Amino acid sequence: MEQPLEINARVSRFGEPAESELPDDIRAIYEKNREKIGFVPNVFRAYARRPEHLRAFLAYHDVLMKGPSGLSRVEREAIVVAVSSENRCQYCMTAHGAALRVLSKNPVLAEQIANDWRTADLPPRMRAILRFACAVNEQGFAATEHDIDVMHLAGLSDDDVWDIGAVAAFFGFSNRMAGVMGMRPNAEFYAMGRTPLAP
Image 1 (tube, rainbow, N blue to C red):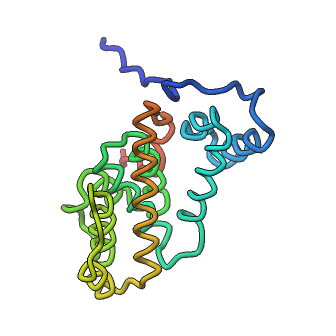
Image 2: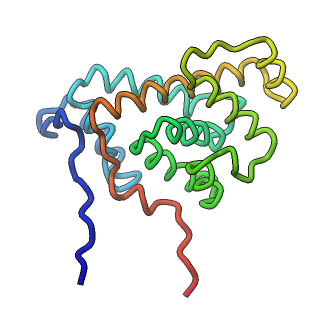
């Protein structure tokens, strides 16, 4: 009988500090995540090697992903999944794919966006958002007035366009740092938000 494939348990090629050595505020972040989702995401463990970087990363992440915005949480997670898919970032696509499945309660749509948002069954507003977000992610991108007009025609405000660009740009950075660190997704992410098949 074939043995199941092992999932690489390595958090980052640069290692991670022992939890007992972490500053109090970083240990508190670990505990909060254990209470909320049952584990500590590897991105926190990897960035904990440089606590000042983790603090800065989380501060801007939380402004973009949880702060006030004309974009819903689902739309913001969809941006992350689409951009991370195009950047071939396994960590972010897996972790935020899980978040998108949970928040949207639509695992089929989340998988379609992860595989190729262009062929996904998307409403027009979401298609416009992901088209712009992925353009922001392209090398040498600079928005034209036409690009902004198209977003306005899709019902998105200037602040919405700003937020789409900020989320896409931040996760372009995050994707590339995940690649530098060789970050691996927690195994727990793969099962989150999936609907069990009926017997």
